[in-house]
Amino acid sequence: MTGAPGFAVAAIVMLAAAVPCGIVICRGSVMAALAAYELLSSVAVMVLILLAEGLGRPGELELAVLLAVLLLGSGLVFARFLERWL
Image 1 (tube, rainbow, N blue to C red):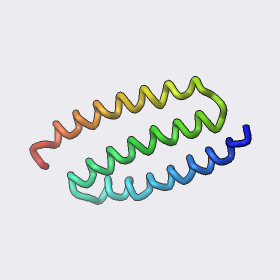
Image 2 (cartoon, rainbow, N blue to C red):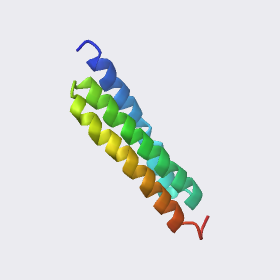
Image 3 (cartoon, one colour):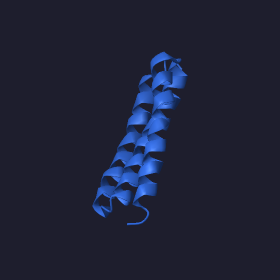
Image 4 (tube, rainbow, N blue to C red):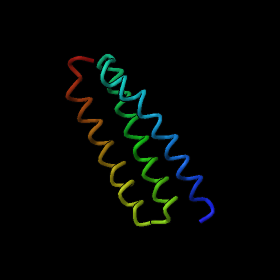
């Protein structure tokens, strides 16, 4: 349990990366918003992994793995939907 505060701090720092991504998604071009969406999904998966490890709940890693698989597919569908504007 000695590494738990380090994992929590790392998760908070990773969440700080979500703010610029949100700004780009709201105000950027379509291509920039798509790239920011993919980056934000990667950050969300990493935050879930850090929190699962920091809280000592290895069962929560399943959620992060499932989210990673689903976000990959949703990013591809989103890109396919937006291809006429890219």
